[in-house]
Length: 204
Picture 1 (tube, helix red, strand yellow):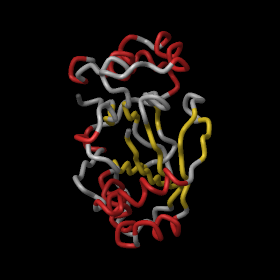
Picture 2 (cartoon, rainbow, N blue to C red):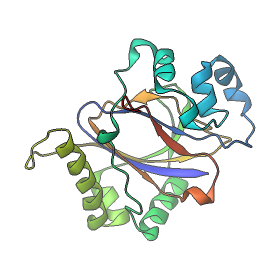
Picture 3 (spheres, one colour):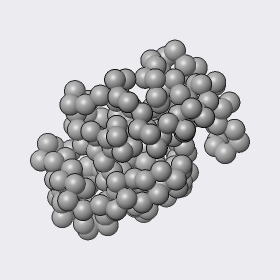
């Protein structure tokens, strides 16, 4: 399974999706209808595990209709290894295992295993230094997008989610309502199949 923490900053964000379905996993019965109805470019990426380089972004965008803005540019994304230490990741993973709500997602109505956290609760779990490290990434992204160095970035929400092939095999492409999103993977890619984060980039 996979877990991830997310922190959002105010505004409108990039179009992305965490792909959850491992290539060898069976589609849960409750998701079979959604998989069958999924446009082919999306199904190839989210269900069939196709190499993203073989599915043109413009084909995916055409299947999304007018509900989302244009794809973002690669310069809008920063990838950092080991943003949080192992103990911080384990603390967040244990927290969502111990206490979570199964709420219906606003994107597709499917249930999410989610623990919502205030900034104070997040700091209590992982420490103020780690919260600041996440905030620093948000500020770096804001500067890339033309934000001012002294501009305050209000935290809209922070939450931890757990994904498994049986309970949440994929998450549809969507555009965040926050201008800046910081996604933190709490488990290493080598520990599970699937669970990759895909973005649609206008510059390839």
